[in-house]
Length: 161
Length: 161
DNA sequence: TTTGTTGCAAAACATTTGCACCCTG
DNA sequence: CAGGGTGCAAATGTTTTGCAACAAA
Image 1 (cartoon, each protein chain N blue to C red):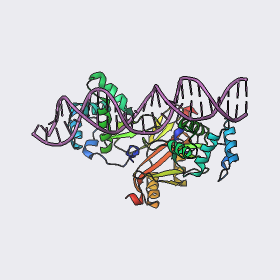
Image 2 (cartoon, chains in turn cyan, blue, orange, green; image 1 turned 180 degrees about the vertical axis):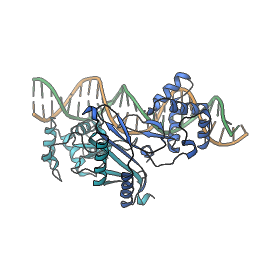
Image 3 (cartoon, each protein chain N blue to C red; image 1 turned 90 degrees about the vertical axis):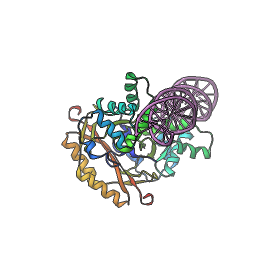
């Protein structure tokens, strides 16, 4: 049973020292790829670059298109393949909304959940200590050891109402 | 952008009197279809029948296959089309796990969320008023009108630890 | 009779995979 | 130079749609 997709927190976490930085340099990206036991290629660096500069929550297609504009010598298979590896290593987090294409973000240093407008797709990040605590309690009550959770709120944003 | 699939609660709810029953008769199904403003056909009744007897959380393909065995005169387009209408009317709830095909169940009468063991797959249902209230507050703070939510907790159950 | 519904086949869509070539380590 | 990584194209799997025939109201 593979539930890693759901783990907004939990799952494997990347090494602390790499996740501490707020902004990323070319060198960090190389280190990340090596850390994963993979070969460093310019495509992989470009994918990481693209994830770090654009706005969060991009689809694989969006990553591919933004890279294609700069250098048409890239295939979407590479994007999908590397994104999947990044997800499995915990460096990126995959978020899915219904039947929509998956969206990716560099795994945030501090945990948060999402509030999504179901009309325009706008995403607001939030964190709520109390809810986190209550979740732990619920797990404890049922004698579960909590390893992760998924919480997404859906609604209509101010401009779409 | 359609996210109604996520609405574990919220969205349009079916008329109370129809949701009160624990078991369904042929007559109930007819009433449900009429309630939705649609024509009553044997395909639609068969789909509802299939949802009510089998185990919960079936895929559209599973519904189609089970109906096809009894009567090969049915197309999957019909299943998908009616399932979507049932979902929009709130009579069935769609659940998605990662990239897997959508699964459907007759909308449960009382709202709950799930605590899942990621080792053995055991599912515990729970409801927490406080969390529900906090979610409403979070939405309000960001000027969203909350229409639904998705909350799944993952962990290891007592026996799997 | 009128309008909604059906099955079929084809399209749409996101994602994965096979393969010959290429590049990193 | 060995083994992974790449782009391309084709395959996959789910869901949607166009359409002519058809059936419920």
